[in-house]
Every structure is written in C-alpha cells, then in structure tokens.
Image (cartoon, rainbow, N blue to C red):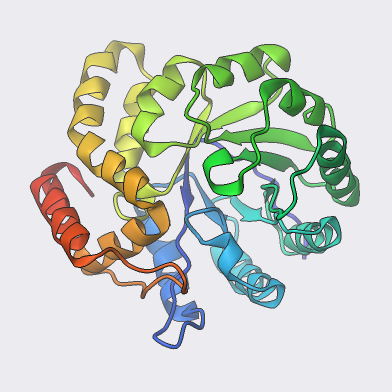
Length: 300
C-alpha cells in the first residue's frame, strides 16, 4: 500500500481505542468513531497516542488497528500512528508497518522501564528514523513516561532526516518557543495539553493535538480557527475560558478515562478502558456529568 504523506496540521484528534466488554478492540465502534471525528471537522487523527492508551495493547493488536483504519480513512484526513515501544526493534517494526499502510507520520514516544541517557535516546530515534521514509514526530510526555526530552536534545533529534514534528506535553510552555528557536522553525510543534492550548499558540505552537476532540471536535476546531486570527483574540479567550472547566477536569483526571466516560455520558459509548485503567469513580463521574451538562451549549 502506498503511503499518504499529507502533512499533519490543524486539529489532530488523539483517538480513543473503543473496547468490547471482554476488553477486545471494538472494530465497528472504532470505525464509527473515526467517521464522527472526521465529520466533526478534525484535520487529522492519531491512533495509539496517549488518549488511545498506547501501552495497553500488544503489537499484534496495534498492527490490526492500523490495517483496518488506514484503508477505511482512505486519505480523507492524514493519520499519524503511535509507534513507540519499549524496545527499539519493536518500534522499528511498528513504524515500518505504519508506513506500509499509508500513515502520514509515525509518532514516537519513549516507552521504557529503565532511565535512558541522551546517547541512548538519540540512538533510539536515529534507528527508527533510518528505518522509514515517512515523517516522524517526537512525543514528549514526561508526566506519563518519566522521560523529559529537553529542548536541546529535541533539537539534536530534529536533525534526523525524517523528524518533522514535536508533540510537546510538558507544562513548561516556553519550551515551545525555545524548540522553535533551536530548530530555526523547521520542527512543527503540536500543542499537547488541552488545558493550555491558547497559551501554547501564543508562544508559537503550529497545531493542536487534542484528546478532548474525541467528544467535542467541532468546538475544538472552532477554537483553533479563532486562535489563528489575531482579530478574533477576544472571542478565542472567551471560548477557551468557557471550556476551561472541561479541559482542566479532563487533564486532571486523565484523558483516557475522562474521554471514555464523556462519550458514554454524551450517548456515544466506546466501552471502558482496558484494565488496570478504570473509569471515573462515582463522585468524579457525577461531577464530570455535571460539567459536561453545564457546558454542553458550547460543546459539539
């Protein structure tokens, strides 16, 4: 299958991975969810990002999802595939497989039990880079991985031939500007925290990689369109402020569980996350339901 390498841009939904009661992947709901995201106006989709619970699935399952979703999307939007793995050889296999099925980019988060040094991280990314020809995205998510890729190291990784993007999920938003400066703007940076997207664009983010887009894609797209128009800055601030209780709760309680529960509350269930991840506690679920009900007028 030929690769569809349309660039990742705009609003990139980090899709949940729907499951059946027996915890197998619900392929029918997955494809329906992909359709809903595209109909909601997203500019791209990521499979097996953090909101897709990348660490919960085997290599065989991850390959199967790519094999059914990429042909189904058929180039309607670019699709980025999370190919991070605990070993470099597995990450290479997953990245090559994503390329074979037409992925627009491979998203590589460092998944590891051991603390890795800079030389090891550079070698890891270089080996993956040299094994594929599609663009590659670096994913820095220190809260989830325990590895914090600092801007100088990111700039060194960005010298690799296929590295085009960075999803920056550190709470230090000034890193976005620093990375842009260190890479002379060559590296496109995705805002990776839904609760600070406005500020991320103020310091130079190029696109928005969103978990909350799973349940309010149209609203996220509207906010993104306002962020790109200086004359609409007041409207953007107003809309972002109205969504802040939603995005802050989602980030605080974990986007895997909150996105699964949001879709259940909104009548578009995708099952529970795979254990040991659980759905929200009853008090949190009640609070989440109230937040979504209260802010439903601005959520689509």
